[in-house]
Image (cartoon, rainbow, N blue to C red; front, side):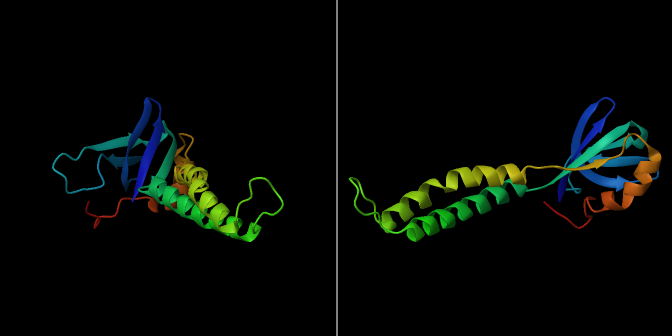
Length: 149
C-alpha cells in the first residue's frame, strides 16, 4: 500500500491512489476503502505537476533494518579490532564490541529511517500525453481492492 502526494495547481493533496481514468486520477483519504468516512477526491491530469509515492511502513522498516545493521557492524568491528595493548586505558575486544554494538545503531537507524522516508516521484508536467506514457507506472501504486486495514 502506497501513500500518494499529488502536487497540483492549488497545493499538495495527500491520500491513496484509488483509480485512474483517461483524464483524471482519484485519491481516497484512507487505505480502508470500506470505511464509512471515506473521502474520494478527483483531480484533472492537466492540473497535476507530479505525484510522489511512499510505501506504508517504509520508514519503520528502514529504521529497524538500520538499527540491526548497526548492532551487527558495531559488534563485528569491536571483535575484529582485537585487544589493545601497551596503552594507559586499554580495552578488550569484548568491551569494544559491546560499546560499538550499543552506540553504532543510533546513527545507522537514523540513516535507515531517512532512506525509508524517500518518496518515489512520477512527473506528469500537467500534460495528458506524459500521463498516457506514465499510466502503466502509476498502476503499480493503485490501492488494491482486497486490502483491508
